[in-house]
Length: 75
Image 1 (tube, rainbow, N blue to C red):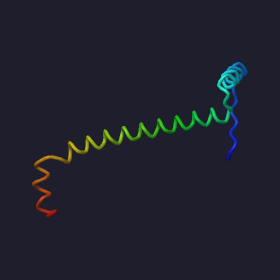
Image 2 (cartoon, one colour; image 1 turned 180 degrees about the horizontal axis):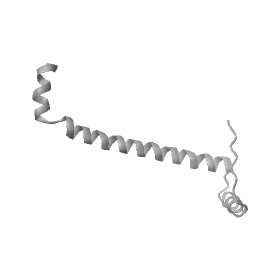
Image 3 (tube, rainbow, N blue to C red; image 1 turned 135 degrees about the vertical axis):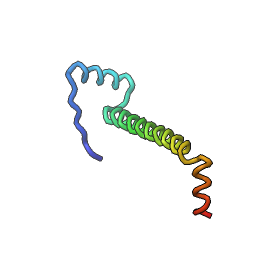
């Protein structure tokens, strides 16, 4: 495990402590969950962009003219 220090303004730190006390979870657990949630969001965003790129490439590569040209060389 690695330790990470987060500095917050006093009022935000108090608000966070109150929130965590009500939920009965540790600061570490809360922050770890936030980080994992953000990383997962980034993964989903990357997957979305890859899907868009794949669809764009399909439009470019799947056409009759290319098929006729490449069919001479591939089979």
